[in-house]
Length: 138
Image (cartoon, rainbow, N blue to C red; front, side):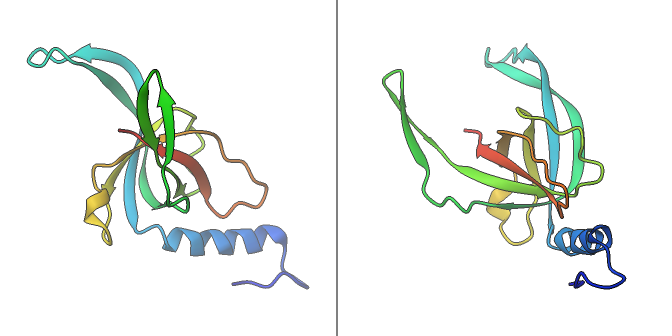
């Protein structure tokens, strides 16, 4: 880590910290945006049609261990919230509502195929990663 002091700017410290944050992004994901719906001819079920937004390294974590339970229209639902971290550069197009598909997870193969919906934006002046609030899509 770079200490901010004489000859070291906040910008250079941020860039060094970004490199460290990106070194922790050992998983890979694809971010997609729903652009329409198509009906599966065999099942008759409507399926979303996606366009690609971004793909690359990511890190995901679920610091909120307990899912929150909701009662919606007399139906009990559970939601699990987490954070997906992606590099700052190149991910500017990611928006609320986009879906993150986990494609590689070397330390937890059970996460491959998981779908996470982006629940809000992330902005910070000296950000080391874009930390997107997400919710598990079920």
